[in-house]
Length: 290
Image (cartoon, rainbow, N blue to C red):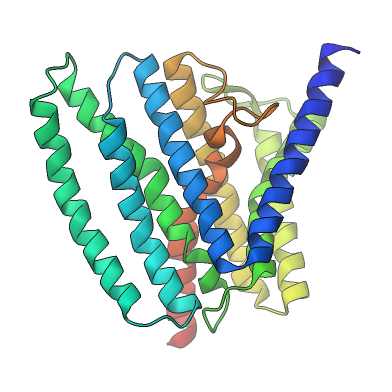
């Protein structure tokens, strides 16, 4: 068996297992979905700190993980309050978590004073960057699926179509790039990306958006607009992660997913698309209400 065929089989099986885990989390319900986001948050932040250490920096892993969990808890608490008709206790949890974030920020700076490391500025910066880059988008993703529905309810099919917007961009970009790719998009960071692939990915995501609106019987304009926002942000998310890996001089952010690399390798587009999707859906809802 050739190496290419072996890698293809491993990648396919690993992807199938990942999809099964995602579907299982969705089947469990909103709490299962939050558990999945939590795993992505912790794994992604840990991988980011690993990339930072490769560069010679020494982020505060422990405090950084705690900060990331607090950030995620804010979004999860709000999501539970909206989706599960929970009591106002969840709002209190969100407020306490937000307050704790402020205290944790102070602790990170305070702790660095006594660590006596060679790169204190970079250490603090990478500690905070890991939480901002991964945990903040995941906190927003806790509520993004709820804004896809008018009643703010968790509906697994809506989130699945949102996920397909991201993955559809990846798949169609790959197919268009392989068959028609001629003009390099950003060779410095990702030599295989082409403008033809970029256009193919956007068109593929738009097609998924149109299909989603038809099946879900929702506004075609809203879903087409969401598809455009998500596809553009996904491309940037992929390039950003490629930039981090190239700076660290590594091929993959981790090896937890055979054939795919790490958490950041698989969810880079998903991560950076979250803030833009949240803002778009929030604005779309405001326009509809007015």
